[in-house]
Image 1 (spheres, rainbow, N blue to C red):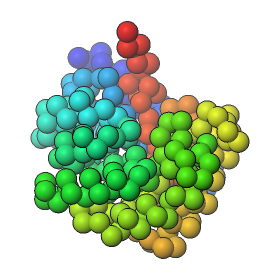
Image 2: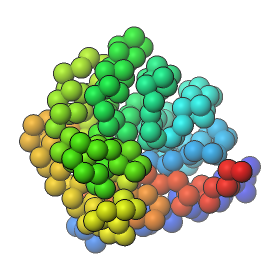
Image 3: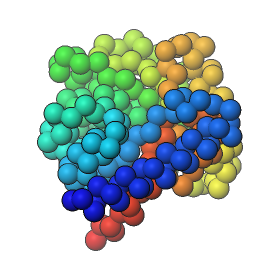
Length: 239
């Protein structure tokens, strides 16, 4: 366990240095950017070590793994982010432990999340996942709504009980005009965020950037970066 703690501490220090450098290069204070560590496929024991090392934001992308892990770590001072594609049949479970849901991309999900949160006596902060590879009215290859669908979803979140619009999330697209251009993709997301904040000023989170492209995300203006492998190591292939 000591070896694993040392490994995680070293990895965290390297990621911290990257974020600090990117913030300095962009003329942003370091506290502008929140690190979310994506702990998928890794055990609750790693989450405990990360908490000991000062991590306060963790993320999961599958409810069947996240729910028991969140329960096991309920005594820790952590904020839980759900970042994966979310089916409506998992909403009740996710609403019981997640503080933020990053992957809202349809009105039906807004309705389901709101109802589940009300039942649980909670309010969920929701980010709209923007698919920069999607045409109007379509969903992206990796989930998300086309940019012109953001306004309707934000209005739906603002109108529903139990949920509120907190901002935007994207994953750098693998296809389309932004493929291989993460900086441009994240800059486009910031433009969409500016429009969203005009109507919903509190929806000021911008979740973008992962292990490979967090520097581009910070340069573009992201407020939150979602880092997994750079902290926890390369995940084993699921056979």
